[in-house]
Length: 89
Image 1 (cartoon, rainbow, N blue to C red):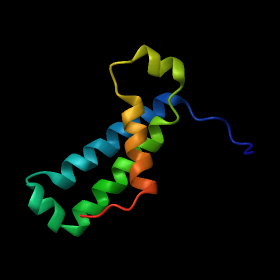
Image 2 (cartoon, rainbow, N blue to C red; image 1 turned 90 degrees about the vertical axis):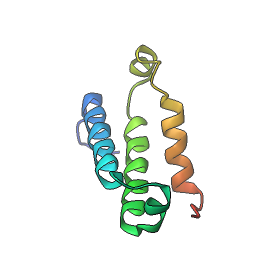
Image 3 (cartoon, helix red, strand yellow; image 1 turned 45 degrees about the vertical axis):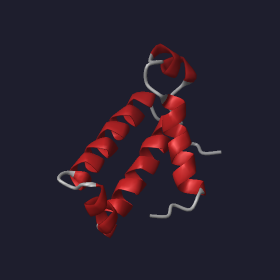
Image 4 (cartoon, rainbow, N blue to C red; image 1 turned 30 degrees about the horizontal axis):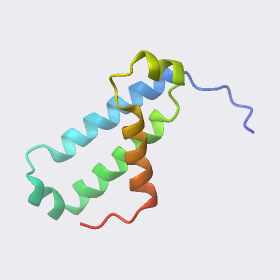
């Protein structure tokens, strides 16, 4: 176990917003064909989607329940699928 203090959950939300903004900037102006053809944009987007899901795992259950309109389970499941499954184009 780490001796570091536990990180405040609000920082994870800020991280999620930052990762989402990166995804938007990487994909701006691309249609699906252009996105898939652009290796750098594709890889960077997938990585940031993984990071969004990872950050979501650190949001406490009581916060997730308070903000139940956010699809927390889907966000985390997307991360798990990207991490553990082969992503073919």
